[in-house]
Length: 249
Ligand SMILES: *[C@@H]1O[C@H](CO)[C@@H](O)[C@H](O)[C@H]1NC(C)=O
Ligand SMILES: *[C@@H]1O[C@H](CO)[C@@H](O)[C@H](O)[C@H]1NC(C)=O
Ligand SMILES: *[C@@H]1O[C@H](CO)[C@@H](O)[C@H](O)[C@H]1NC(C)=O
Ligand SMILES: *[C@@H]1O[C@H](CO)[C@@H](O)[C@H](O)[C@H]1NC(C)=O
Ligand SMILES: *[C@@H]1O[C@H](CO)[C@@H](O)[C@H](O)[C@H]1NC(C)=O
Ligand SMILES: *[C@@H]1O[C@H](CO)[C@@H](O)[C@H](O)[C@H]1NC(C)=O
Ligand SMILES: *[C@@H]1O[C@H](CO)[C@@H](O)[C@H](O)[C@H]1NC(C)=O
Ligand SMILES: *[C@@H]1O[C@H](CO)[C@@H](O)[C@H](O)[C@H]1NC(C)=O
Ligand SMILES: *[C@@H]1O[C@H](CO)[C@@H](O)[C@H](O)[C@H]1NC(C)=O
Image (cartoon, rainbow, N blue to C red; front, side, top):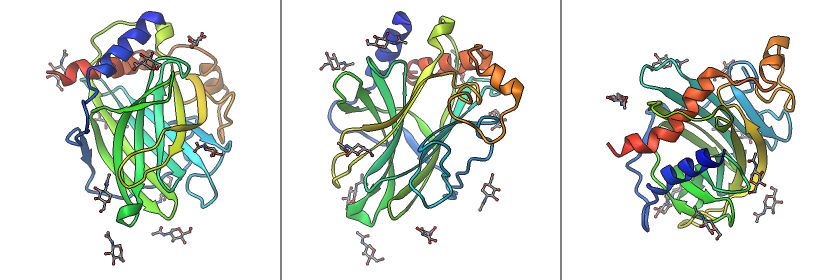
């Protein structure tokens, strides 16, 4: 655990831009349609949300995130993320090894109140010790986002990356953080964590069905989520770890 954490932090630190952050690492889908539902939660996608079991397609307050890991790509895994929440500033999904130490990679979907609530996207690195954020350039693709009043919805992909390093099995688990923050037209405020999933195997859609009831979890899915290490998860997390290295090429 200790070594994996250090590697992760090191990989992130390399890309902290001094001063302002560019957006060349971001690309947007031409199709802006965003349709986020609970369909597939616990079966085809890993879902976390607060309040529990809330409906991301509804109008009630609901901070919702989902993750799908595609390990079929020949060059590595791809993470597909859905995020929905209520904020006049931003909502964000964070990935971290341990929310109490090290860093969190934050994927931020925001609205610009200075520009009619128009949607924008950023990646940031959060220091878990003091909650400070710094700009970081992490490639994100197929970004789609919509804003309706205080409801922000977005979908995006962390693209295929190569798995070239080995890591101990216990290092393949990440905590998902969901939260919100402000945007004053110029700067993103600190990340206010609303939900910490605790350690989850991201490659297993059912890895949290015991704590977050999915609509129809099967017995086999529940068993799979009780702690077994999914081989795809190993590939996926290796890939997340090595993405930064590959970006240097
Ligand atoms: C949104 O997704 C749900 C479930 O995947 C589907 O049933 C519904 O038809 C979709 N709605 C639109 C407008 O695409
Ligand atoms: C997974 O990635 C492969 C290769 O990029 C692609 O052909 C396939 O459609 C993807 N699967 C899903 C479910 O997106
Ligand atoms: C990573 O994948 C790219 C293709 O997307 C390939 O050109 C490159 O050789 C791969 N790198 C390694 C280290 O496997
Ligand atoms: C997370 O970090 C805290 C504080 O450093 C430590 O006490 C705890 O054991 C760590 N948890 C895991 C699962 O490593
Ligand atoms: C927000 O809108 C203002 C006014 O249009 C603009 O100057 C600024 O660049 C926008 N910020 C972002 C992050 O889109
Ligand atoms: C915001 O929208 C209003 C009405 O559509 C428009 O008149 C105004 O120019 C827009 N402001 C900006 C900064 O785009
Ligand atoms: C995070 O903040 C702590 C306390 O200010 C500092 O000691 C540490 O070096 C920071 N870590 C990173 C990765 O910036
Ligand atoms: C925005 O949300 C309101 C309900 O809060 C809904 O009536 C309206 O249709 C939504 N607009 C769009 C463009 O989805
Ligand atoms: C953080 O979020 C909680 C719950 O949404 C809210 O009560 C609290 O005021 C927020 N804190 C800050 C500093 O924004």
